Image (cartoon, rainbow, N blue to C red; front, side, top):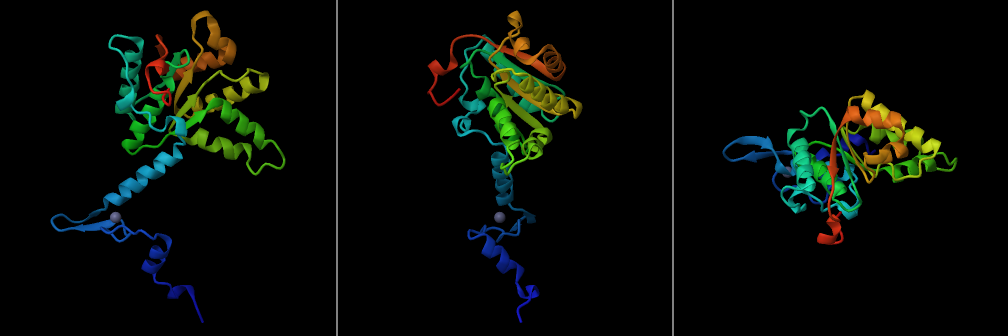
Length: 243
Ligand SMILES: [Zn+2]
């Protein structure tokens, strides 16, 4: 009679993975002729791939990095790059998030994604979330035939060590929207989690405050360093697939 004891473990590994690494044969440890047993580089790339897919960077932005962000010296865009790069370089020794404010097309999302990618290159995880889509997902989870639950939608948002919340304030601010925004952001604030926000609304003339309420605006002050990007439309000078 067949029993599970009869399965050879290495065979099982081969069955799961058709292209087994030639250096370590899927064990994760390779034998270096000089250094002896050492972690196989294939495991590092596997880790990288996992982090990258867990970050859920939208296809539209997947190529965004510091390397392809172009800014003119001495502009507010240039200052924004300095802030973003500093955050990514110093992480995890960072205590405040960033709030990128500026008109559409000034490169806010490009910079936020560049930070995530830089962190992933360093082996840390993060999550990208477009605020409007997140609110939609939460609403959809209330539908009784939905397979998802509010908690299932929110768990990664609460747990991410670094969260990019893109397009804050872009959704029509109903009472439910304002309340939900506050709950999410306040939870991250209480848990001391770092959040990077982008918004098209500026502090001048209390635009942002009107969209997100005063209490949330003051939370953001405590959580983030403000980075205002002014200037010409970034996308006009770039290939259209970048923001
Ligand atoms: Zn290997």
